[in-house]
Image (cartoon, rainbow, N blue to C red; front, side, top):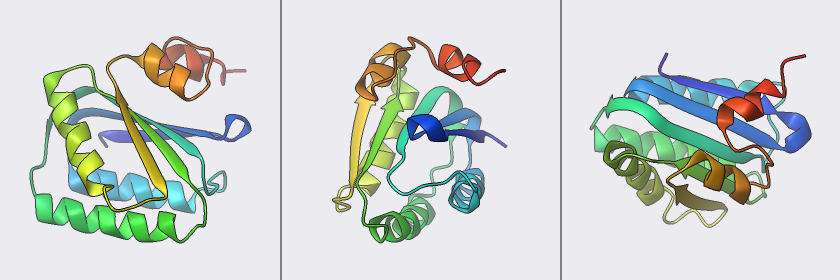
Length: 140
């Protein structure tokens, strides 16, 4: 799978990392797994890292249908969602722009794009400078 997520309930944060080729089926599977996860909570902040993608599926109709289904679930939760995308490369910026366009009419979802992990983490109120450092705090 090219999409992995980690929920950090005590911080109200979900870290999503894409790698290799980003396929719509992988995004769909990760979204379903997240929404069904016992640590899922409405309004969790999301940090989505596109740093390591090498390409993405360009079936825009299918992608927009997926996002519309997610928007319906998130919008119906009665919470506001902050999603921060890490997009340091032109390819990552293209993918983040596609995600941002899909949230354009969903007022419950606030999206931001940052070029570095440190900037994204700071926007989310996290003290770490890298995602790896954040995830290392989970290892006990």
